[in-house]
Image (tube, helix red, strand yellow):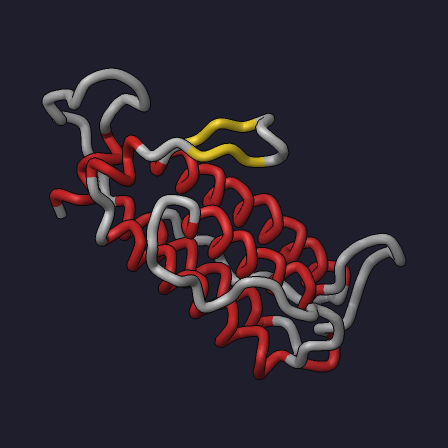
Length: 169
């Protein structure tokens, strides 16, 4: 669990004495479980559903989450992600769920192997608009997931489906 403890460290400055830690991998596992439950809740025939023409379909939302999970965390590791870029239109449920699951596993593996070098590695995103290190990339990934999963919950409701009950602990 020592690798995870680094996430409690400040983003800048010398290596601190770490006293404030939390269970990053447990948090990520709960996010994975809830997100995959949302995907399971949507019937296969509605994976192409989009509330408006300019919006992503339900399946495209899930694939987008998977791509970004891999993209952000690949910036602090040499571990090759299972997903780079791929066609996102018309993927069926039976392909989308394992794809997203593999991206969650990738993030968990990166976090579990997280080192002080990963913590200190600086990367630029969005044309240099965002400077990030390991913890910031993890939080960006989690925030991105939450944003798009929230949209998927609305898609479920628009189809008359009650989303899975959220579990926060």
